[in-house]
Image (tube, rainbow, N blue to C red):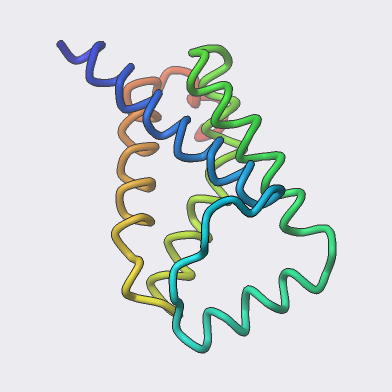
Amino acid sequence: MNIKIRMVLRILIGLLLVNSGFNKFFQYMQMPEMAEGAVAFMMSMGKTGYLFPTIAVIEIIGGGLLISGRMIPFALVILAPIVYNILMIHALLDPSGIMVGIILSVSLGWIARNRKESFSGLFV
């Protein structure tokens, strides 16, 4: 039972991240309304010209790896900074969207905990 839950959760989170990554390139979904501070922060990140495409590629690669079930520890490591920043942006600048950050953080944390032997070298 635990394996099936983990697989479904991994695939759903992977689909969410792949969709988010492709949306950064093709803008087929409208962004939800955000607080003024969050809008200013996102605008400043967008003006760099490279940050959103980099985040999109990492989301697509990491989400694709989660969906395929291959190299899951690697996917978790590359997605951790992105998920952390999603959580912090919503916690500090736009509390209305905090549930997305919490769900992503808890889900990836749970998947990582179930693969803790893969991370033993990181936390010696």
